[in-house]
Length: 327
Length: 287
Image (cartoon, rainbow over all chains, first blue to last red; front, side):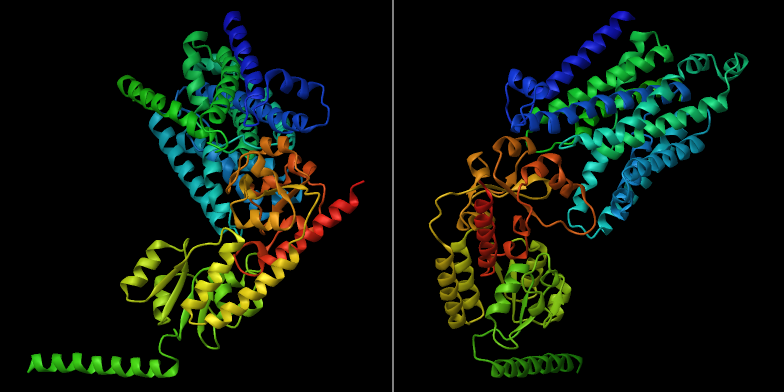
């Protein structure tokens, strides 16, 4: 277990540095790192501190939070298809953010944007939990997810199309697919407190989730309060997905792919899967964000395009496996 | 009996058509289109400058938007169209003037309905501006007015062009991080006003996306951005990114592109004027 932890941490560190040195400006490794740390106030420092550092930091925190949220939701619903992007939580958060930006709520005070996205995410996660029921059968979960995603996407498009700003309608792609291009430290500071809070809440669920693998009755007999567990899960997922989506759009499939790959390596224990998925999620989003810059530099290929290209086939594979199994 | 009736109906229709055509021809000279509809912001403005009285019937709704149109006051005198085939057909125009970026389907539909449509290319240089004026003069059969406008344009441009020793390096930066190189109207306005286009040095010669990093490394003396539209948008967020903010040393109104920059009309001269003044101010302020 220690080996997996070290391996994933090393991968995240390496990819973090990779993310710092990849970019259209074509700077050398040494000069970019020294410009970042020493800082002479020249254009190189500007590039490193205001463009690449926030981008890499956001990839780490958003990736980690998405991986963690996916693993926690899957542990609670005991269903490998539960993922914030797929079941519409990210989409609802995006709707909240878009609404805040276009009604001026986001401009009115500093925390307007993340708070509105949090409210959207909360509405989405509540809707799905209510519609899918506590046991979260695959079919009802996916159907509820489709309904919530479709509604959120439609409302987001509606708001953007109604905007007097001619650029707004083109931004539908950003909110549906997500991107880390041209973010600044402001965005890091907006998202970081909420994501930290959400990750702390979610990571404290590990013992409860382990107990839940024995079934609800057994878990209750062991003294797990299911209502409290559900409340903490909803709060944690709302915080991390809401804040992440507010600054980077809805990045899908991270919470599906990462826990799925890591589950066999941690012996399918939800408690271990939580931290492993957080590290794995950070690595996956860093990797995807490096890839979009290498594949199509200067074109702003959306992150969600890459994660969906990897995630959607895996999703189909999971459905086939479930159909053979219990569905 | 039935057949006879039908025939006479057709004949009657023809007669009406002939009479109306004759009446229309009598109203103006033979080859001057009497009822012209323009459906593109830039052709709107050229037509308003050159058309004879009562000749221009309708302009596009964008001509009334002060952010894009330099001739809002003049445009109020005309009917407004939204570039839909149906409404334009119902205006019964003799001639429709469209831009190269007008909806293809609309242009094709109007042509199917036997309405003559002239398509104007956008202007990519100051030379193109003269050509478009000539073309508009021919289309409207107002060659004399066009010639007068061109000679006035040439004179004013000549006055604006001066020898500039110290050319500040500028980058045009728009929503979504787009820039304009030398091979664009905005790029030509920039160089006519005595600036060096720094995006051009970096290899971005036409209108394309300039990554924020490249902008920072290029380190221009001035960043000229577009005017933000009302209602927030993420596309325009990039103009308030800390990198752009720190590069924008001159925050005067001249460092913003306005309606004079949009179209290849003589209004570009006003854009050159304000930009030249900004350059002189910049150089005076520097130690």
